[in-house]
Length: 178
Image (cartoon, rainbow, N blue to C red; front, side, top):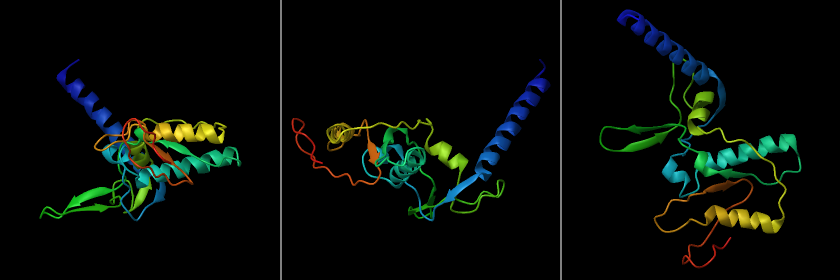
């Protein structure tokens, strides 16, 4: 293969990638007038808008399959990015803003595209329906906050639809309070 053929192959891949990104960014799935927090460090240590939104979306999807589903528990470890942008005003002040306009794809400010969702949920975790007793649900929830501690990252951060999570950080040998 000549250098010219190699360059043509690289250009072909680049054009295909460009087209694929713009196709996904033009597939609008919703909108948000706020920055949706989904940074890895945040989703593992605190409640975030992307975590809550995806838990609620999973509940809605599960209820389409089985209307008796009452709770959705989302694995926060699968959330990898925010939806929106952080803008610097040049003076060291940063603002969290909704998604920006993308003229190449026709995406308007605040619109959430397939590309945004795929970037945020990179691992494409599947949805599983389980029937749990109240005791089993408490065990799952306690496991979700078991790695909590001052300055630590949650290893199995969970987001729960239709519930508010609250715990009290106590010494390692004690159980979290729900």
